[in-house]
Every structure is written in structure tokens, then in C-alpha cells.
Length: 268
Length: 286
Ligand SMILES: Nc1ncnc2c1ncn2[C@@H]1O[C@H](COP(=O)(O)OP(=O)(O)OP(=O)(O)O)[C@@H](O)[C@H]1O
Ligand SMILES: [Mg+2]
Image (cartoon, rainbow over all chains, first blue to last red; front, side, top):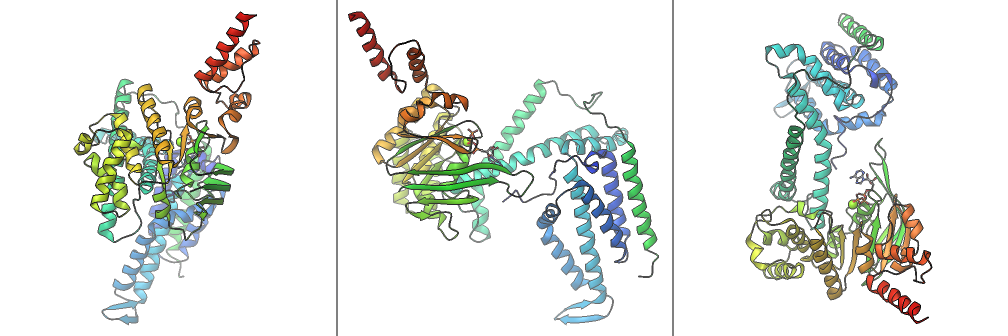
């Protein structure tokens, strides 16, 4: 039941997209997300679609996987769209239901908001689908490093993320195991009203927290006994080096961004 | 409540890049009152298999019948099945969550909707069976020893009075004395209530002592199945899949190879002693 969540899940592969420098990939993703907000006409999304299609085709990530990533956020998506439909003033009124009215302006905004969200999620999930958590945090650490002089704890943040990412699958596995064990004792996680369901979570959460704390404790001891001490002057096994393909990827992204900006002045 | 498993296949995370075939073409039957041992290497699919027997996992293909009821059917009442098939997980002490030992053991019976009288009776009964002093009933399950925790977890299942008892490596991580105690309790429970008992284990000794049928798993398949004698006579095959036979059987085999006539399917120390003594007497008389 928890395994359907694909956001943040890595699909191993050896495509060019997988091999890109994580720093470049993170920066590219940011550029793309910002570009999405510059789109002001439907035709602008054609460029975004083309760009994402290109990445998906090269990386060979199954499309069904990307769709699955959208599933958990479907509620948020529907909520955003319907809020925008009903509560945006402007444009001509198409339909009135009590105090709510649907306007052309509302429909337009809802459509744009929905599309933006979808592209945003697909864009970021492509980043995590093609980048292993380790290189992702490596990339983040490098990007944040220049800010450490103004007090951003780059290494610590990266380490925290690495640990969190490392333990998410473990915790999910553990939660599943405990759930099954309690179901074998007749526990019911699926029926009843909200109060009953919330109460029903106790047999899952108590053991889960206990084991999470135990794991944290063990990890801390293991790290300390190996003399782990912060980020100063640590060397790394894998040095990040930008390659021609990284510049190529950056160039393609910038071209798409320029096209999107240019698209703003189109008439349709 | 006989169990019948027919051509069961199971794949974890089917249709994703992480798909793992965990069970392949599993077929077997277990009759009433049997004591079955399941043995196999780490990752051979033992835990996966037993989770199918109370409907926690649904086979990718194949059928499972408990007392003639197809539990792979969508309409089957799983709660009813889980009432009949008690499953004690690997390291069950990690599922304890209540404030007191009593409440934790009562969790199962409460979910069955029994009345307070009956629950109380069953909890104390279960505590007696696993050998937990009734005085511990009001203690927190987190402040007692590991071996006791394990027993409380087993009691939690016993209090549901299942017709089939399945235990996944109940002795894992216990000291020799703790192991011995748990095993003896399980044997006693089986002798007394005659419920089908399925014991998953890594240890040939444990299984050889109690089981009347052994299922040997290897890489998701049943490699061997039969009485302990039948299974342990396949010593080479067992060694090939990294399991080996009980030490005493292995000793008997060595002796045989050196020309001492001991049957190669000796299972217990008693039996071996008898044969060796008989042999020694024989040589002396000549
Ligand atoms: N929840 C899960 N998700 C994905 N794969 C799993 C899961 N549980 C088990 N597996 C895989 O299925 C296979 C069989 O695992 P299983 O736990 O049934 O083995 P086992 O015989 O019980 O091993 P052990 O002796 O270590 O308990 C293994 O390859 C394992 O990696
Ligand atoms: Mg197991």
C-alpha cells in the first residue's frame, strides 16, 4: 500500500540523463520549474511537453511510472483546479450554482494551475527518478557550499537528507511488516469511521516509533564509533566533474526557456 | 483444517523495475494434526510462503484452500481466516505496543469481538501455556526480557485460539536455553491441542526433532518434501543448497563412509547411540 509512492524513488539506469552531473540536473530542474511559471498561453506548454518527452525518451523511464508519481497528489490537483474554477472572478459568467459561478477567467486559470502543477511534479520526479539519492544529496551539498560562509550548514543538511532518504524505504518496509503482523492479530486498518481508524493506527505507530528511535540511536553510535565529525576537510570517494554532456543538457534547457519566453509574445 | 496449496506463484512489486520472484510453483498439502517444518536459506521465500496462508499476501497466480475454502477468492472473509490461522511473525516482540502485557495479549481476542470474561480467561490461559508468570500481567511489555517478550507475542496469537499455528523462526536471536524453552512449549501446545503447527526455521536440529513433514525451500521453490528421514537421506542435495543435515546425521554418514554399518537416516542422538553401541558390541564379540 505504501509502495505506490514513486515520488523520490530512483529507477536505476545508464542513460545519458542518469549520468548527468547531479549539480547540473538540480539547476536544470530549477530553471525548468521557473520557466513553467513564465508560460502564459497553452501553446507555450508545447515546448515543455517536448522537453519532458525528450528527457523521458532518452532516460527510458517507463511512462506508467511517471503517471504513478502523479497519483498521490491527485487530491491536491483536483482541489487546486476546483478552487480556481469556482473562486476566480473575471471573464464572462458561464454557469451559476448558488453563490458559486463558473467564469471563463476561472476556467482558464484552473487549467493553467492544473497544468503547472502537473509539469512541476513530472519535472521534479524526473530528477529523482534518474538520480540516485546519494548523488542527489551530493549535488545539493555542492550547490549549497558557497553559502556556508553566511551560515548555511551545507554538509549537515546534506547528511541529514542522506540519512532520511536512506531510511525512508526501511521505515516503509517496517511499517508494512508491523501492519501485517497486527492484521494477523485481527487488527483492521481499512474500515470504520475516522475516529476508529485513527485509534486503529496506535498498534502501528507505537512499534514504528520505537523502532525508528532505536535505529537512530544505533546509527548515532555507529557513526561516532567511526569518528564521524562534521564536514570539515572531508575528502570524497566520488569527485563531481562536469563533462561536455552536462553543458549540452544545460544548453538544451536554455534554448527551451528562450522559446518559452519568446512564446509569451505570440498571439495564440 | 487441512491446508492445500496449488501452483502458487508470487512476485513482489510486480510490474516495476524492482520486481522479485519470491515463490515459484508451490504445491503441497498439510493434513490435520501435522507438525510441518519449513526450512531454507535466507531469502528462499519461507516468510513469503507462510504469509499466504492467512491471506496477508495474495498469490500472483495459484490457489490456496484452508478447510476447503479458497482464500485467494476476492469475496472470502479474511478476518474469519485469520481467526483460524494464527501467524507469529519473525521477531514478534517488535509488534508489542500496549501499556501492559495483559492488554497486549488481549489485542487479538478483543479484535475477535469476544466478551470481557472470555478475553480474560483466554489471556491467562495463553500466559500459562507459554510459561509467563501471571504476575507479569500488569507490567509494561517494554520492561521485561527479550525471551519473555517473544513469549508474550506468541501468547497474543494463542489467545485467539487458532486451529492452525504458524511460527516464523520463533527461536531466532535467543540463547540456547531460551530456544529450548520456546521449542518445548511449541511441542507441548501441539501435543495438547493437536492444531496443525508449521515451524519455520534455519536449524535442521530443531526441525528434525519435531516435524513429521519437512518442506525444503530454495530460491522460491520447493526443493524437497517428505518425512525427516526421506529429506535427510538427501544429504548431498541439502549441502548443495547450503543447508546440511543435523550434526548427528552427518556423523552417522561419516561413520558409514569409514565402514561402520549405521543407517544414513539417523535423526536423533539416541538412535545413533543405539547403533554405535550395537556395532561396538558386535566387534568385541567377534
Ligand atoms: N516486502 C518485500 N518487498 C520486496 N521483496 C521482498 C519483500 N519481502 C521479501 N522480499 C524478497 O523475496 C524473497 C523471499 O523473501 P522471504 O522473506 O520470504 O525469505 P525468507 O526465506 O523468509 O528469508 P529469511 O530466512 O531471511 O527470513 C527475497 O528475495 C526477498 O528479498
Ligand atoms: Mg523470513
